[in-house]
Length: 109
Image (cartoon, rainbow, N blue to C red):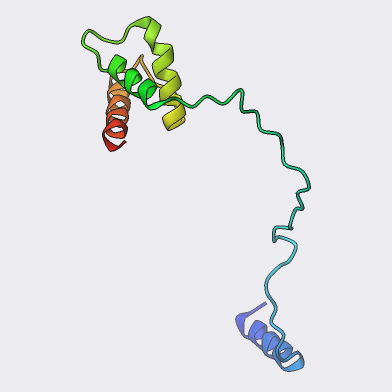
């Protein structure tokens, strides 16, 4: 259909149905979903680190002599909670960037 034909068609519709505007396709619009029940919260499984635990994790991460193997799990758990990603101990560049990110978080809070 050419542009001129389409314009003529739209004009004709406007004259026949004044005040009614077509508003796109209704089948692609999201339908309202009625929620009757909320899922139960599992507070037992949720772990939120305290400020002391966050500080301790950062201290262990930046301690002189490197990170001890037994502290990596705790550091990773805190880092995962704060930033939603695992701490990459195997890559020096990634670990440095993540440590800087963690340090900026500590300074801001």
